Each structure stands twice: as structure tokens, then as C-alpha cells.
Length: 152
Image (cartoon, rainbow, N blue to C red; front, top):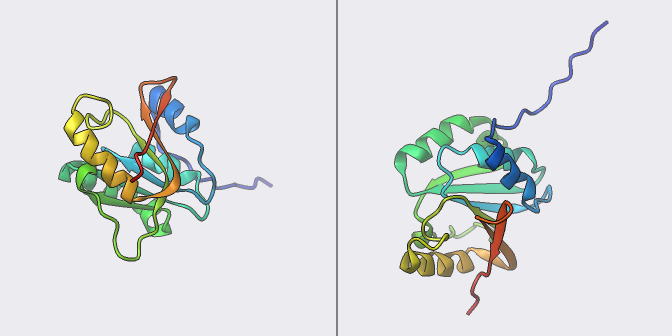
């Protein structure tokens, strides 16, 4: 008799994105914020690693957010993931929203140095949306590099 075992299959990722997600210090209860989620592949892979945690995936693009929501319907229903259309420099937590303890961004001009003024505004918003000991990672390291979250 054969027994079928169902497993949660994470999103298919490029080798680069897979390395980035694998390098993130995610715990099952982490509260993760992805900035610039695009179609949400990395966010879905993070959600697959969460038990009681949550990932908020944000992007400024309405079409990217629509793609991410469609692809992540199961993760959103489970409560492990949500998707929001907002630029990092405009991010504000909702009144009942808990702060995040881990933030990551891949190819986001405001955080990789391409748009310094937007980066300063984004970092201020990230500081307001995260715990005091939160960590921020961006691509460009091996595979990630940590950025300091400025605290007032």
C-alpha cells in the first residue's frame, strides 16, 4: 500500500533568490517585511518557512501586487502572508499591526544606493515599522549585506 504525503511546496525561485531566502535568519515565529516584492516569489518561499510568523510583502506597483496576491492566495488565507501596495518611503503600520523583526529587499533602488533621498525616507519608515532589534538585509553581499536601521 502506498501512502501519499502532502508537503507544502515553496515557490520556484531562481538560484539567486533561493540563496537570498536561505540566507535570511528566519525563525518560525518571525515577522518579516519584504520591500519590493514584485510577483511575490521570495515572499511565498519565506511564508513556507513560517509557522506562527507572518510576512508582509510590499511593492509600489499595482500590477506586481496583483500578481503577488494571485500567486499567494493559499499563504494569504493561512494568515502567514499579506500583500500591500505601498512604497517603502510611504509605509505606515496599521493601528493593530505588530512591528516587524526582519526586513529584506532585493533590487530596490531606495536601499541599494541608486536613490539616496528615497533611501533616507525609506529607512525612517522602516525604523518606525520594526522592533528595536530588527535587522535589515539587501542584496549585493554574498548573497546579502546588512544595513543599519537608523534609530532616533
